[in-house]
Length: 515
Image (cartoon, rainbow, N blue to C red; front, side, top):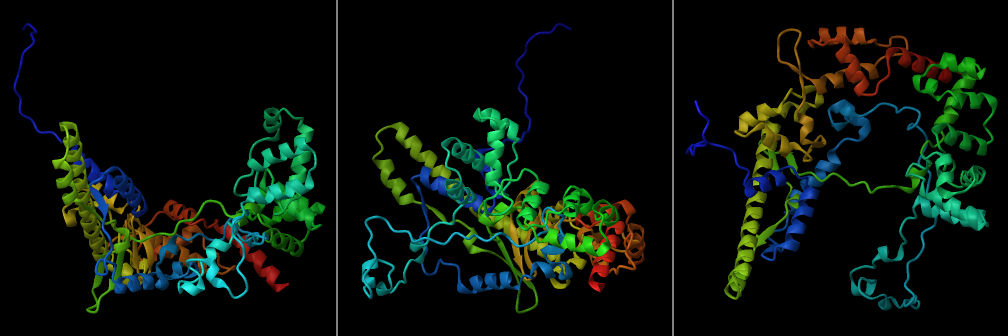
């Protein structure tokens, strides 16, 4: 058969991603903070969009604000989460050496008053000169206007450098080294590459670095954790040969191999316990006392509370929903005075975009509420009894129950939070894998099994440390069919050391307390 070009008419179906659908999908997976930023950008670009002004009857009612505050106040402290099913069921045990140390280094820089050159302090008793916001205006003084910003670690080090170094060359080297100090207080880049980039000798860079390492906070400018701890111990006059051997073998400290440490340090068990206690009082991250990135608090999107009839009530948090309106009157006014088709086309596109945005926001709110309501219905046992009663749940179960696709449920649960009487949880927290039951009953949630493992290990004694095999046997007796490797994986995810390491630690702690 000869190959010849032909024109054929064929009818078929295909999925087309319209602009409306793409916008709805994009808004659905945004967090409340990202959504607010997106809406702000649209308000700046689209002249037909305007922010809905809050009237008295539009504001979030005081009852919801009070319920939201009660949800936060009712959340358990991190120490109590692992016992009653709060988010701390994933809380971590005692951290390894590089994070389990003393308090954060305090900021010793006194606050300074902020005053522009044109300002002069008011006369005694004359508070009216302070302008709006003063006590005489009835609004209270703006105290933030009189407090300086908190100094950064770089500012703190530069002030000390100006007093410690007089040479212009060394000061330039010191400023460059301070720029390389990260938020934790370390210099990660090799000194050789720094000297090569600056065109200075290696000895000069090392000399300035040693000067910086004498600054406050103690330990700043170190290149490794061992060097950071050694600097602090030298300042305390505690860097003896035994402590030096301990610092040089931090990996054994992390593994809690106390027998090897006693042999390398040449000390007995009591001295080793004192050395480890001294080590824990040091600061492994000297720069964190000055802060780094601003930590944003979690803003819940959904509020769950117990109703008068004993049923769970699910509602959206009003503050997390941006309010925008389409100004139809302004559109009708400007479209009449449009001079050409280009202006009319622009206005028409702005109107369509504004209508799409408002509808997408409404659809997003309805979808979040629908998914959250179904999650609460599925996880009623968790809300009543805690994490031990968390049910296995996957996206398909929720999607089938509410008549949506799994991908839609996945987007809804991403970066969304729910405030409950047990704390604030991400929606994805309620989706856990299932573990078969040993007696053929209902499956168990993986998160609930983690909680049981954590509870058993917390309750063990130094004379009866539970091995992974023992934990498997106890779980099997409790109706959980689980493999030993799964128990080991869950234990490691909780950052719980092995039974050998726990036995060493508990025995050492008991002997130290007995002495």
